Amino acid sequence: MALLIALAGAFTLTGAATAATPTAAHSIAQTTDAGTPTNSGPEITTPQQPDTSLKTETKNKLWIGGIAVLLFAFVYWRNKRRYSKWRKARKAG
Image (tube, rainbow, N blue to C red):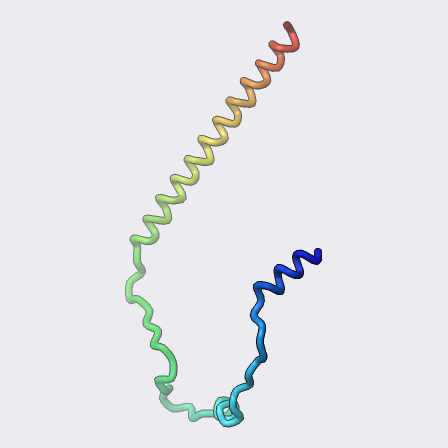
């Protein structure tokens, strides 16, 4: 447990926290006019049409994943049957 705490302490940030200047904190706390928004942040534009190439890529990945799971299940079932036969044959003789 002590090792875990030591590792967690090694990866955390250390140092004194610096407070914002009083004028910056005061200007953020003030209310603004309800008029047009200012350009203080990044512009976020949404695409007009959804990108369908991402959807088809995701569907393909899901199909491939499903096929991989089925193949794994078949191999597991086959190996289980073969092991059961081998174990019975070994006990019998």
